Image (cartoon, rainbow, N blue to C red):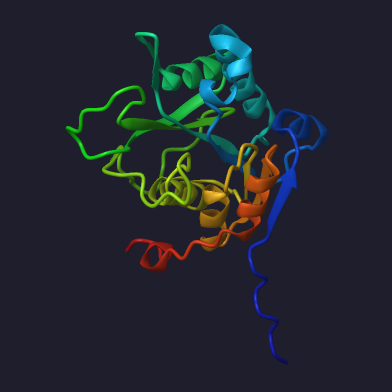
Length: 228
C-alpha cells in the first residue's frame, strides 16, 4: 500500500477586525501568535494617549487569548513623537506584567546597518516572546541580536529573517503547529510559517492586504532546513 503524502501546510486569511475576531474565536490547540501591533500612524484617530492605552490593552488581550501551551511573539519598532521616545518594548513588557505573564526572551533586530543615523523610527526593532507561565530552558541557542530583519515583501513587514527566528523557536521549543497573526498585513509571518511546515491563520481589516496575504509565497531555500 502506498502511503498518502503529508498534507501541505494550510493558510486561512480572514477579512475582519482583529479584536472582534479574537473575541469570536477561541485559540486553536497548539497555536501561538506572531504579530506586530499597529503604530500610532495607523490609528491616528485615537490620539497618542488613546493609542498607548489601546496598544497595551491589545497586547494583554492577545496574551489572554493564546492557549496555555502557546506563546505570543511581538515585533515592534520604537518611534519618536514630538521629541518623546516611544518604547514599544516597554509597552509589551508592561502588558505582560499586567497579565502576570512571563517574558521568555527579548531580542533586537537591526532595521538598518549598525551605525546608520536615523530620524523618527528607530534603527532597530524589538522581538519579544511572552508566555502565560514559565517555560523550560530552551534546547536550542539563538542570537540575541539579528544584524538585519531580512527581505520585506512590503514596507511595514516584519522581515523574513526575523520571522524565521520566531517560527524556528516555535518549532524547536513549543508544541505550536498553528501560527496566528491577528494584524497580518501582507502575511510575511504566515508565509514563513507555511514554508517551515506550520499552519497559519491571518486576520486583517484591509481587503487588499488580505488578498496579498493569501497569495504571498516565500521560498526559504537553505533557511528551511534546521541548523546542524
